[in-house]
Image (cartoon, rainbow, N blue to C red; front, side):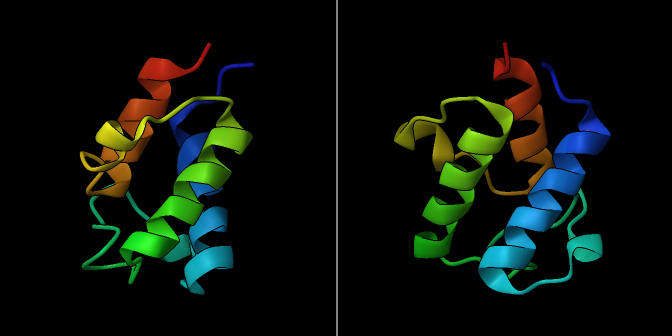
Length: 82
């Protein structure tokens, strides 16, 4: 089932909260994973794996590098979900 933009933001918030300990409500579209949400490269791999499972998308390594902000990830998931 396709997720809405709001579902994806909320889901990413929960994922980032679990992995980086950042409050889910602080995860907004304009936030940078590395600069604002304290997600390092290793944690980003965990975020991507969790997002792939939760939203049923595949995010190739080359595309992960392009996901700088939460908004980038939301757009990617919206574009690639079944």
